[in-house]
Image 1 (cartoon, rainbow, N blue to C red):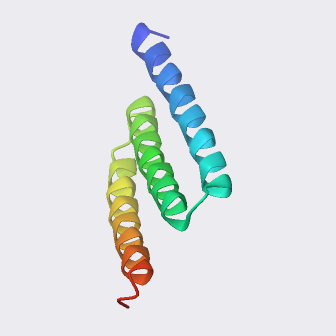
Image 2: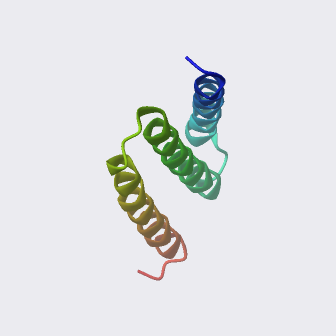
Length: 88
């Protein structure tokens, strides 16, 4: 195991801590907008997590999965934002 693997494992730990803190904000958020932003940050953290796992395992297919997941997450946030503006 080289130094790059330790850095990747540290990054995965930090990402998981960030996801758990945003999950708390998602359930505890005082407003709906806070919950939407927390969900967006969780999905972006998931994208970064998929990317770091792709680097760690040397599998390029995970990058394609991350791209599709990012597009679906972006569309989902746009739909929820339009719904909150009562524009659907």
